[in-house]
Image (cartoon, rainbow, N blue to C red; front, side, top):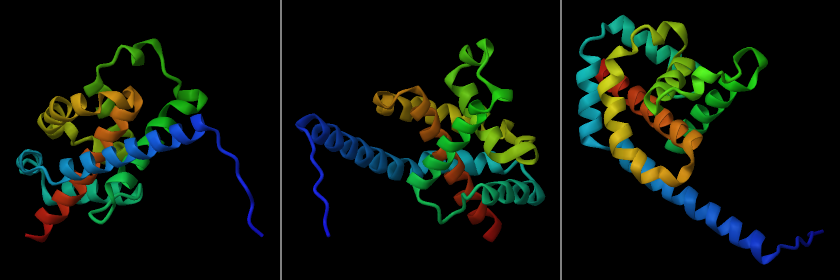
Length: 171
């Protein structure tokens, strides 16, 4: 038996706006993942890493559910969950210092939380790709809200990193 659900005009408007926003996010994520400039920046950054260091990062990415086959939306969702969990338990509440962090620092914290200690030890090489992402993508997603912007950029960075490491290791 089917059930009737009543929606007000404002409910319907909110749903349509959310679907449109999600579609825009999917389109932008797809553009970011295939960005030749960003992929070149990450490839250049990976040149400083040994095969073992790349393997450690790849294992860390796999442990959180990100690999070369992960969809952009799934990567963003994983980054969002990690960002939320980083500040949701009582031992890691956002402090006054955390509020003063730059967007780049918050993204780096998201990447650190995603990759754990092993992967995080080698993340200085990501400074240039992160700066590029912040400068090229954040203006386009300013309507997302800061937490969503951080999750978006972190998710895209992790996904591209997984793709490029797999490609580099296969060569």
